[in-house]
Length: 312
Image (cartoon, rainbow, N blue to C red):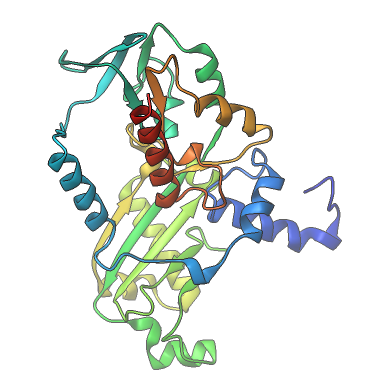
């Protein structure tokens, strides 16, 4: 951006693009591919956005039931730390030493976990190692995110004070974009809910990944107080419940979702190929379309890998 759009003339444009890349794509603007972002943003169509009525929990429940109906088993609280393999045989060994054996394995973990250094909590070791695949994984971008859910005792942003402040009714308001420490907020529109969702993405989220929940709550209240010209203590008194979801500091997620870096095509092409028809990688980071970083991307990748194995 500095090279192609330098100086004060384009300062507002640079600021806008960098904030959108960080906030929406949770990407580091210095590391992300400008062409990939352009392709994604030009393909945006609000008319194709869908919200599952009962939330993503309903989707997970459906997939769980389908898996069980097909004879599969789901094992919880059993983290795999070592995958020993040879062509046509895999042994997955968990933290407690339990071993699972199969002819093939699908690696469907977050990219952030796969990028973790050996020995870190959540990291998985392959024996024999996969140097080419490891290099390809490290070349991919993986974003940082902190999400805040805040429930208030009423919808204060629809009251008369806010309407006078904004100069119009905010009853149909969807997103709030600001320059505050927690810059992005959204409502549950078209539902009139008392819940506001805060969003901090990209390098700013990475910087705050070790911040306590209490400090994130304080920053959230301060941000909303500035946005709506209210007293932070007044907002705190109206707060019924809150939750801070810091995926970036959790060892089994380590961030949000992938973003394209320069020359990522070769890495994605390599990882979309199996290792001797034995190890398969799947996840939203391997998706080739315009719905980057979405559940749709993850499902598309997983379905494609399943079809590869069935066709063997």
